[in-house]
Length: 236
DNA sequence: GCGACAG
DNA sequence: ATCTTGTCGC
Image (cartoon, rainbow, N blue to C red):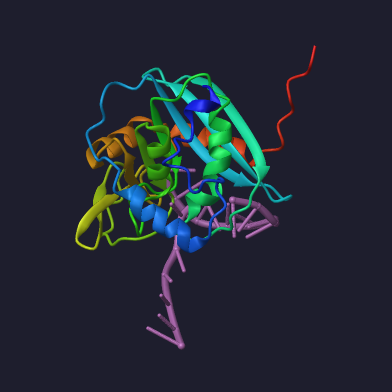
C-alpha cells in the first residue's frame, strides 16, 4: 500500500498534519461526520483487519493491525508501528491521539483490508465520529467500532446469553448495539464506523468471534499492542 | 456548579 | 491505556 494514497487533502486535520487544538478537533469531527455513510456492507470481504493501540512505558504509541483472510479466518500478517504520542487522551477525541500511529502501521500493508474492526466506537460518539468512523472515512473502507465500554448513549441490559443484544440510543437515534458476545460476560458496544449499517456491524462481530469476548482480529492486535517490543527479523 | 467520560 | 494477586466458576 503506497503512502500517497493515504491522507486525502480534504481529510487532513490541518495543512500541517495532526497538530490541532481540542476545540479545532471537535469542529473537524462535526464536518467529517456529515460524510459518514451507513449502508449495508457492499461485497464480500476477503480480508478483515483488527486494529488496536497500546501505550508503552516510554510514552510511545504502538499501533497494531492484524490481518485475517475470510471466510477461512486464517491469520495473514500483523504489522506494528511505534511513534511518540503527541495528542493527550481526551474522551471523544481518541482518533486524534491514535490515528496517526494506526496510519503508520497501515502503510506497511501491501493492500488495504476489505473490512476494519476497530477497538473503540464508530458513530456511538457525541459527534458521531468515533475512531472507527474517522479511520473508515480516511481509508475509504468499511469500518466497525467495537468498544469494551460505553462512551455515550442509553440502553437496556441485554440477556445473559451469547448473541443477546439491545439497541444503543442517544438523542432519539440509534447509534449502536449492546451485544453479549459470550455468555455471562460484559457486553461490547458495536457501532458502524463507515460504509456499513447496524445489522451488518453486529453480524460481522458475531461472525469473527472465536470463544472470547472480542473478535479474533481485535484480540490479535490487542495482544501485540501490549506484548514485549517485537524483535526485528534478523538481517542476513 | 456537578457528574460522565472509548483508550 | 497501565498498575497488580488471588479467586471464583465452567
